[in-house]
Length: 111
Image (cartoon, rainbow, N blue to C red; front, side, top):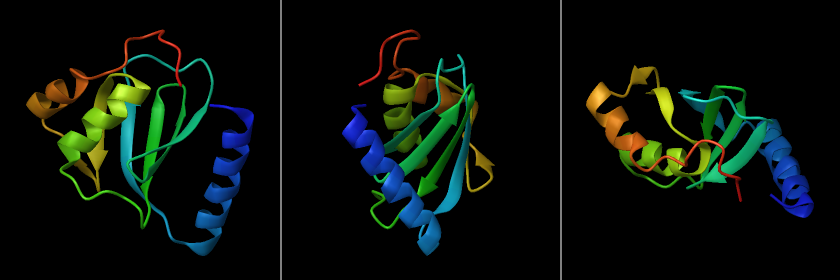
């Protein structure tokens, strides 16, 4: 992520948090820890990850889609998950395995 994008994302995140428009909806655990904290938006969901722990927060711009698909789209950018729970409901093992088929390879630089 370029510096300008990172600054814009940080300002937007602060505004959304202050407005109370976003609420934590997803808790996920990455198979491999990230080398540095990540903040990104995937399909309208704001993701913050540090180490192996990721948290996704829905926004008004969140695309309506099945969680298995949302998991796959997040895995494509963040990496494989060992756990993924939306609104407290864990994704079943078969859907988690399908989600991880699109996962970004470990060590691949992010965009």
